Image (cartoon, rainbow, N blue to C red):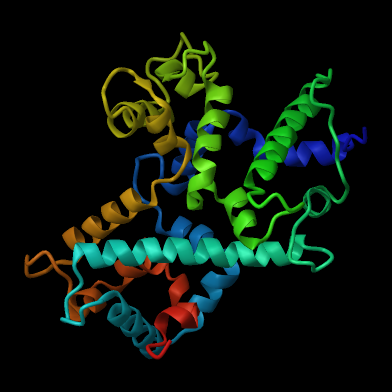
Length: 323
């Protein structure tokens, strides 16, 4: 067995450590970055992290006001499917879901080309390892490593391998593009959902009862007995557990409820964002948005999933009317 050296393991674990604590903890970490200490939304986070980094922020700044409006008007016309001059909540929600799907596929295509070293249209497990770790890694399934960091990495690597094998739907060695998307984004593939549920139960269902309790949901969190109150992220996660995930209110997550936690619910996110935009931008109270209302609140619209935080203004497939 070839083990990656400690020099490789340490930076990998720094990146992957939130995942070891489960989706709830990773989401909480994201919330703390996305919002200030007082809970105030940080638009700079959207522009830098969700536009694609500082480079795209700088590119956005170079567009003059006329070009920004021209491109934005092209996007508005595409959202308005029935061409009646109004954007409804349903049209906005559908557009946002389309945007999610578009960029998932585009990002996966770019990754796929980088992983497919021999250009044969399939990414093998060996190619995946070479791209990720610069070498082929092979851990023994049943051999627990003494070093804590190496053992954590071994577990993550074996989980990746199991997901890779499950994504290989056609039985041909290696992943084609569709299978690669299913591996990277299991929420986009129906056949991956049962695997994701079982994977989550194995990680979080510590007592083996087939459910995830609130304590299991929070992972290894232990309240500091000297603290007067719980951390903000714990309060947020408890609220999500009770009000977002535990639909039947029985104090635990069944497999289907668990799926809504570990797999992003793009439809729900899109509906919430569409409703938020109309609430904030609808000046005449008709529950619809006109082009004039959007242009009057341009900054709000560009800091929204509706334009993928402005990225669509740089993507001709979105703002060109003839495409």
